[in-house]
Image (cartoon, rainbow, N blue to C red; front, side, top):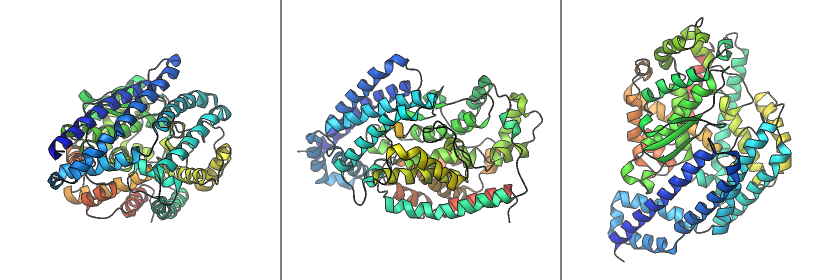
Length: 501
């Protein structure tokens, strides 16, 4: 078989799968935004059908033949070809281990689980939701056995989101972070310096919040001609194509932070997707490399940019002009307030210091579930124990506790650790960007986010899946992945805010 012809067929097949996946993504966006209640059952069947078709195409033996033809040729001297073939081979080997029937069952269970979660969370009905959760766990265990793993069942699930990541990597990383994070929380709690936050809970009309968000996001670099902002129960970003990357948010008219910072977070995801090379659509070089790297982009824009003093030097006067609730608030007080450190029940609203403790809790529960050390029925009690131990707070309802996130409802086990990886990567990337570009906050104060976005485009976005995530971070920063930059950032920022010595 001619290698050039084989490679071209691989590209064409990849683009066809990407187009079908784009349609599935659009259906998923609709499911989580505007679908009528009676449309859920049919949408679940649609996802199952599309999943079967995509799985069939991804596991076609012809792909194995095409890959072999290219792998044995001089085309592999082309770095673009080599990168695509490496990633295609990995994906093909994993996909062919999963029976088509199991792939369809997983897709349908995920769709039904998300719909059930939305319904039962409103009712605070854990018992009603539990069967859907148990089905997802059962199917994910079957999936892990099918694809195989090195040491633990959980490793197979981690690999879906972060290539090369293993449980043995996560345990020491979390231990490295847990001690300093808990000590910093205690030092902050003991500080006499506290932010005033009452004004964040005044009246913030939804229309004004949306208007302010739509004023800010394009200046950050989110291309509204290639995106849109909608409302949902659980915010997300979804890529249909680099020219169609959508984000969602949720509004609370008595709380400023949720919609604004949630939108900046999702815009960080979206700007990564908008920055992937469109000419590589349908190939690994046109895909994001991992959820950890993805989360590094969202957390960086939300926290290292969006909660910085430089950022609010530009935007606080605009916010005060738009929101009557801020009329008696000064800029310094506002910056301190949006950076308040206070243990809370809800992960998506957690501050930067306590956030990783939320992820640690979920990681430990997931690991216990898949090691068979914890029964699904016992999750609420285990959740509450860990919340009290790590954060000193205990949820009063299932909805604000074990049912607060949609991820388990959709079968996304192994997903949560990527949030902490995102924080680690974000701090390391930001530190490297400042070493290359100088201090960035003066740029933010002028509304100039192009230097940072341009650096990220060059060091991260344009590479797609050319390198595995850990290698990508090392190439971008010149150092292996480390928690050091994150710990330095947290200590420096919050030590200054709270007057710690």
